Amino acid sequence: MGEFGVMKNIQMVDLRSQYEKIKEEVNAGIQDVIDTTTFIKGGKVNDFQHNLEAYLNVKHVIPVGNGTDALQIALMAMGLKPGDEVITPTFTFIATAEVVALLGLTPVVVDVDFDTFNISIESLKKAITPKTKAIVPVHLFGQNADMEAILALAKEHNLYVLEDACQSIGSVYTFSDGRQVQSGCVGDIGCTSFFPSKNLGCFGDGGAIFTNNDELAAKMRSIANHGMVVRYYHDVVGVNSRLDSIQAAVLDVKLKKLDEYCSNRLSAADYYDAAFSVTDKLITPARIAQSSHVFHQYTLKLNGVDRAGLIKYLADRGIPAMIYYPVPLHLQKAYQDARYKAGDFPVAEKLSECVMSLPMHTELSEEQLEYITKSVLEFVG
Ligand SMILES: *Cc1c(COP(=O)(O)O)cnc(C)c1O
Image (cartoon, rainbow, N blue to C red; front, side):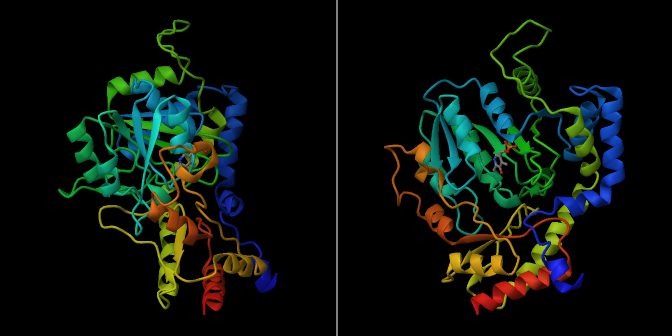
C-alpha cells in the first residue's frame, strides 16, 4: 500500500478501524437483540445501565435518546420556572444552552479560562443573581472543569450543578482531600452523549443521565418516559427519550474497552505535546492536576499562525483539522440578545479565532502521528 496508503486514511475519528477489532463481539450482541426482538427496553439496556453504574460508581444511570435530551430532562427535573437563570460557558457546543432556551429558562453565558477552555470561576461569580437556579459546567474536550470551586459557589447560593459530561466520560476528578469521582458524577446531575464520535460512542444516537440523588433519579426516569410512573398514569409532562437495545448492545462491548480507549487517546496527546514543544507558535492543551484528561479533542491554540492557511496545507496532505468552536454562543444568530455584544467575553472570542483540533481517536498509529506533527511543524516553521 505504501506510505500514502496509510496516510490517506487519517481521519478526525476512525470508527471503522476501531470496529474491526471488536467486530465479532459487537455483531453477536446486535444479533442477539434481533433474535430476541426486544428492541426497546430490553435486557441489553438494563445490563448496560448496571455496568455503567458500576464503572462510574454512581447510584443511578438513566439511559436516554441522546445527550441533548439528557440535558433537557435533567433541567425539567429541577422544577424551574420561566425566567429562572441557568449559567453556561459561552465556549461550548450549542446543545448546552439550547435546552435552557427551549424550556423557556434564561440562558446566562459566562467566559472561559484561556488555558483549560473551561468555565471561568471569576466570570461565573459575577453572573450569579437572585434568579440563578443552576450552573451547567461543560467539561470541554475531555478535562473536568474546576468542580470544587463550582460546588462551593453552588452551595453558597443554593444552586443545582448539572455537568455536561458529553465529552468527558471516563475522566476522573480529584478533590483536594484526595477523593476521586468520575466525570459527570460530581454535581447533582451529569449528562453524557453516546453520539458515534464521542469517547464512548454507539452506532446511532444515545445518551445517559447520572445522579446519586434518588428523588431526582425517579423524576428523570419518569420524565424520559412520558411523565409516567404507573403505566398510563402521567404525573408530570414528559418526553419520549430512550436508548434502544441495539445501541446498548454496542455500548456494553465498548464500555469494557473504555479505559483502553482513554489511554490510547492519552498516548496520542502525549505524542503531539512532545512534538509541538519545540515551538511557541503552538500552545498545547493545558492539563490540570485535579482532573485526568480523556482528550475527546486535541486542541491547539495557534500563536501568530495563519489558521486557514494551515488547515488548507494539512488538507492538501490528507490531514483533517477542525475548529471547535468557531463562534461562541453569545455571537450565534439564534442567541442574539440585547444583553450581550461582541467583546463581552474576550477569552472565548479569542479562542474561537485561534483554536484548531487535530485528528484524535483510539486508533492513531505512530506513523500517522509522525506524519501529522511533521506536516504541522513544516507549515509553522
Ligand atoms: C455532543 C454534545 C452534546 C449533545 O449530545 P447529542 O447526543 O449529540 O445530543 C451536548 N454537549 C456537548 C458539550 C457535546 O459535546
